[in-house]
Amino acid sequence: MHFDAIGRVPGDPILGLMEAYAQDPNPRKFDLGVGVYKDAQGLTSIPQAVKLAEARLVDRQATKTYIGGHGEPAFGKVINELVLGADSALIAEQRAGVTQTPGGTGALRLSADFIAQCLPGRGVWLSNPTWPIHETIFATAGVKVSHYPYVGSDNRLDVEAMLAALKEAPKGDVVLLHACCHNPTGVDLSPADWNNVLEVVKAKGHVPFLDMAYQGFGDGIDEDAAAVRLFAESGLTFFVSSSFSKSFSLYGERVGALSIVSESKEESARVLSQVKRVIRTNYSNPPTHGASIVAAVLNSPQLRAQWEEELAEMRLRIRGMRTQMVDLLAKNAPQRDFSFVGRQRGMFSYSGLTVEQVTRLRNEFGIYALDTGRICVAALNQSNIDVVTKAIVQVI
Ligand code: LMR
Image (cartoon, rainbow, N blue to C red; front, side, top):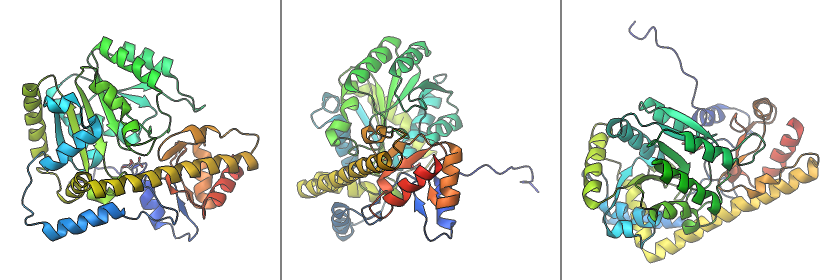
C-alpha cells in the first residue's frame, strides 16, 4: 500500500535495450546498442594482459580489507600519468587529486554530487547530443543542466554555435566536453577547435570537465588525451573523469577515476577531503579488484606493452569496420552519402537513422540500435556487416 502511487519509469535507453536484446528469442539478432567492444568472433573477451595481471594478483593477494575512499594509491598514480601525461607538472606539484571510482559513471555521479554540494548554484553544460545518462546524472544530483549545440542531424559539427552558447553561459558554470571519441556522435573537435573552446572557457571563467571514457579508441593513447593535456597546460582548474571499462574490457568490474586539478597542493587536499566525504556517504570505498588489475598492467612494462598492442588491435578493427560499412553502403545505397561514418572516431556512429528506421531494424531484422540512431560500430564483424548494411538499405 505504501508504494501504490509509485509509477513505472521507462527502461534505460542503453542498458534497457541491452536487457530487451537478451530477452529476445530471435536466434538471428544483433546487438549494436550498448557501447561494448566485440572482437572478430563477436565476443567481448578478456585481454591477455588483464588475464595475466589477474592471475598474478590472485596469487599474491594477502588481504581484501578496505582500501579507503580514494582507492588504491598505486592506481591513482598511474591513472594520473595515463590521463595527464607522465611528465605533467600538475603531478609533480601535487595539484592533480585523483580518486578511484566505480566506473566512469561513478566518477560522473561523484563529481555531480561534489558540484552540487561544494559549488552550489553552478550549472553544467552538455553537448547536444550527448550520452543520455549525463543529463540524468547531473539532474538527479540537483545540478542545473543546459545544452550547447554540437552536431546537427546532418552529422556536422557546428563549432561556431557551440562557442556562441559557451560565451552566453553564466560565468563559472561547468562545461562538460568529451575528450575524445564523442558519445554518441563519434565527431571530435579538431586541435584548432579545442584551442577556441579553451579560450572561451578561460575568458568566461567556466570550469572545464573532460569526460574521457574511450582513451585509446580514437587515434592512440596519448593522441586521445591531447585535449586533457591542453587544459593541463592552461593553468585552469578542471575535472577529468575516466573509464577503464572499454580500454581494459573490464566492464563489469567497474573501474574508473575522477581527477580534479586544483590551483595548489593545499587546495587539492581540501577538495579531495570533500570528495572523500561524498564517497563515504555513497559507496564508502570503491571496489578493489578491477583497479588492482589496471594498476598491475600499467606498472609492468611487459604487461603494458601487451595491453597497448591489444588496445591498438581493437582500435584498428573498429576502423576497418567503419571503412567496410561505408563501402557497402556506398555500393548498395549510392543515393545517400554515408562517408561521414569513416571520419568518426571511437566505438559509435551517429548514423542519421530516424527512430522509425531504428524501430524497423529491430522489429524486422533483429538489429538493436539506440533510438537516436547511434550504432555501435565496435560490435560489427564479418558475420554481421552484410546483414546490417543490407537492413539499413532496406529501411532508409
Ligand atoms: C554506452 O554509451 O553504451 C556505454 O557507455 C555504456 C553505458 O553505460 O551506457
